[in-house]
Image 1 (cartoon, rainbow, N blue to C red):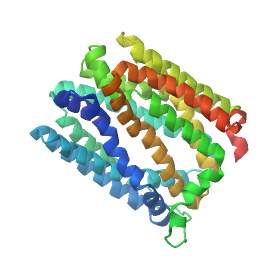
Image 2 (cartoon, rainbow, N blue to C red):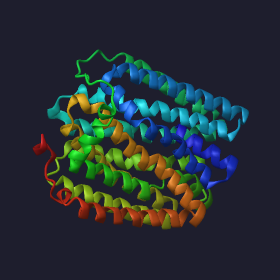
Image 3 (tube, helix red, strand yellow):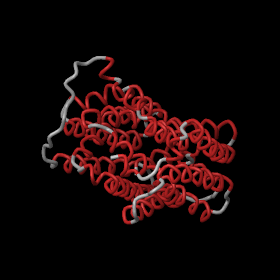
Image 4 (cartoon, rainbow, N blue to C red):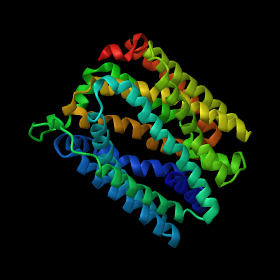
Amino acid sequence: MQTVAIGWELYERTDSALALGGVGLAQVLPIIALTLIAGDLADRRDRKITVLSSVILLALCSLTLAVLSYTKGAIFLIYACLMLSGVARAFLKPAGDALMWQLIPVSAFTNAATWNSSSFQLAAVIGPALGGFGIALLGSATGVYILAAIAAFFCFCLTAAIKEQPNTRTKEPISLQALSAGVKFLWENQLILAAITLDMFAVLFGGAIALLPIFAKDILHVGPVELGYLQAAPSIGALIMAVSLAYLPPLRKAGPALLWSVVGFGVVTIIFGLSRWFWLSLLMLVLSGALDSISVVIRHTLVQIRTPDHLRGRVAAINSVFISASNELGGFESGLAAAIFGPIAAVVGGGVGTILVVLAVAKIWPGMVKLGALQELD
C-alpha cells in the first residue's frame, strides 16, 4: 500500500521520474551500509527482539509519512523517513529470515520456500490494490500511510506470539572476520553466488515497477485505481506460479529452469515497455511476476539448504543486499535512465540487459547450467 502511495504522491508533487528513482535509493543505502552489522546481530542476539524493534520503527515511519502527506511537508523529509525505513529493513530482513527458517525442518525447505513466496505475493497483490483504491477513495495518500502503520502493528502482535525457539548463536568475538563470515561462505559456494547474482542484475536492469506511475499517467492514460492493478499484477502472476510450484513435482533441472525463467522475464519486460494497451501491459506484468517467482523459489531453497544455522543471519543479510539492490537500487537506475532516455527506452533497454545478464552468468558459472534437483544438495 505504502509503495503505491509514495509513488503516486511524489509524482503528483514533482512530476519527476528521478524523484521516483530516489525512493529506491533512499531505502537501499542504509541496507547496504548496515549489512554486515545487521547480519552479525541476527546471529549473535535474540532474533525475535530484533524483528519486533524493526517493525516498531517501520510503523513510526508510516505515521510520520502520514503527517508529512497531510501537511504537505518538504520532500526531503519524505526521503529522510524512507531512509529510516531502510534502517529498519536492514535489521528486519536478516533476523526475520533466520528466525523463520529455524522454525522449519530441513526436509520441508523447498515446499516452505514456495509457500513463503506465496504469502508474500498474496500481500503484494492485496496491498497495491488497496493502496490505489485508498488514494482514489480518500483523495490523497495520507490515509494509506495510516493503514500501513496499522498493518505493521498487526505484524508486531503476530511476531510477539511466536514461542522462543532454540537456535545456535555464534560465540565468535566481534571482529571483521566474524562480520564478513557470510561473504566468505557465499564466495565458497559458487552456485548460491551465481543464483543471487543472476536475480540481482536481472531485476536491476529489467524492473519497471518504479516507473509504473509514469506509464499509468502519461503512456497508458489511466488513474490511481488502474495503477494499483499494475502494481499488483506481478504479484498476481508470482502467487499463481508459487502455488503451482507447491503442488507440482520438484524441479529436476533447477539450473536451466532458473536461466530460462530470467530470459522470459527480460522478454516480457521488453513487450511491456513497447505496449500502449493497458490490458497487454497488465498481462506482461503478470507474466513477469510468474517468471520471477521461479527464480525466487530456486534461490531461497538453494540458500537455505546450504546455510548452517549459526550463519543464517549473516548470509541472509548479504542476500538481502542483493535483493534490495535489485529492487530499490533498480528503481533508482530505472528513474535515472527514464530521466535521460525516456521511460520507454529505459524499460526496453533494461529487458535487453536482463537477457545479456543470463548469457554472462551461464558463461561465468557453467555449473548453473548443470544444476539438477535441489533436494539432491541436502
